[in-house]
Image (cartoon, rainbow, N blue to C red; front, side, top):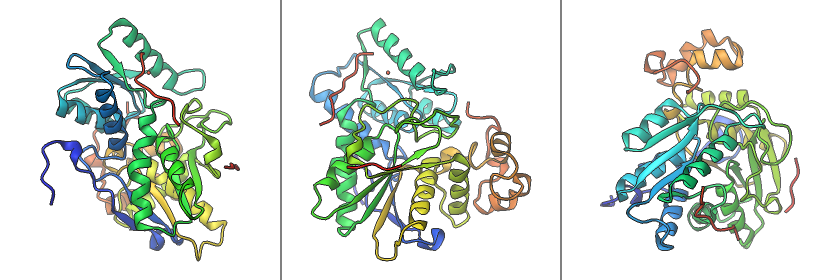
Length: 359
């Protein structure tokens, strides 16, 4: 076991789950939640902070500020606490309650934006608030995960090589699309790989990251209400869009087999399973990336009243009110829930980043 003195010094990157018995298709899931921040966002957070420190952008008086739907906010909260920085996370009403409480427990301040932007999301308003904050005080430093090259470099240097070492014969990689940092880092790495790897982006229905009409999205972590500045569509071979009810069903399907994953993972695995069902996958080596685990979603996608209010009684394929037995199998009983209601970008320290796509 390693001995560490800083929380970001530990991050288990070599754990994969064989999902064939659950999904019915050959699919390995790379689990990214086994670190003290609990998600893949630790990699980007650490890269962006260390880059800003090297460039002299962060000083002892600096106050980190970032727009985040949750996981990056937790990662930055942890790093800020460890390094002695103040941190303000600007999020919105979809942020899971447990995620907000985690940030506050780590000493961060959390500002919740309630107003939606013109695309029906919150991102534009969050960024506007960060910009106004930074304009008001020079001490605020916005790392800007949406434009910061460190976001994708982290995955080019770590996530993709970890996959390549374990699966040198990789054929298809499924990656969820949010800021597209993970997607772009992995895509750039595997474009240089000696054998062709098909890069399949998985997005949420209602996201406009790859175009299309905006729509309601209640599960944080994937999707954007604007085109991601980091996105280079020439590096993406295919885009799959997943409806939130399909995300929820896949999360519960995995939970009933003992694997409690978060909403982003449910989306990616649902999209991957759909792709595999339409292709001859018998001789393919396929990997999907799981950004986090499910504990932060106990009051949302694993909570009966939340599901019923937003998606109706049949979202799990049976009456939600009769789904308590399935919920209890996962260990997520109603008495573990803290709320039944939906859970309740500046002067960027960014650097610009740097085949075919079908929908």
